[in-house]
Amino acid sequence: MNIFKNYHIPIIFIAIVIALISNFGSLIAVIEPLTFTKIIISNQGYVSIADLNQTYFEDNQWWRTITPIFIHFSFAHLAFNCLWIYILGEKIENIDGSYTFIVLVIFSAVLSNFLQYVFTDSSLFGGLSGVIYGLIGFCMILEFESRYVRYDLPPAIYLFMIVWLLLGFIGILDLFGFGSVANYAHLGGLISGILFAMIYKSFFTMRI
Image (cartoon, rainbow, N blue to C red):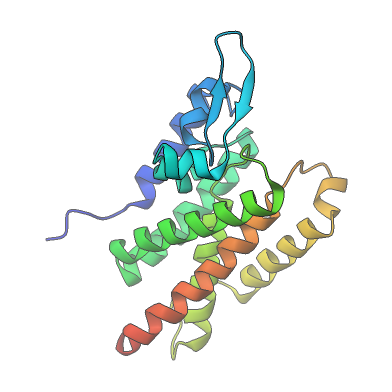
């Protein structure tokens, strides 16, 4: 019996706990261990941000490639992301297995966080939305190539998420008050999900 299952539940739980104890990302000292690069806070209260070389190759803080997914900056941000993790996570774990799900989450987190940092040169970002786009990309590829209904997600969901991504890049979401959107994390997540699906189906063609 596989006791390691339902990984989407602890992911949601951790995100909620971090949001509450950090007051939705407003307490820098709380979220600092989770940001993509190290944030240095001096005794005088001055803040400086380390670069990739110092964070990863000098201090070996490689967990930071993943942990920004647990940072959320508003209740709506947290609720929306947790809802999608619950819906998509449950479907993928039930159909493809918990190990496939957690590897996909890690793969999507690393790539989406890296793209967001590279294209914005900022470490103050977070959220599960990059991973959600990874899950969407994964489901979309396998669903469209499946001989039967695989995840039972309406095709409009895939279209909506892609349109949402495009609206973010052209600035429409900012105009309507959605705040700063991690567009490159979304793009990185979608790309990682598609890539993961292509790798997955090449090894598990009999299951698709």
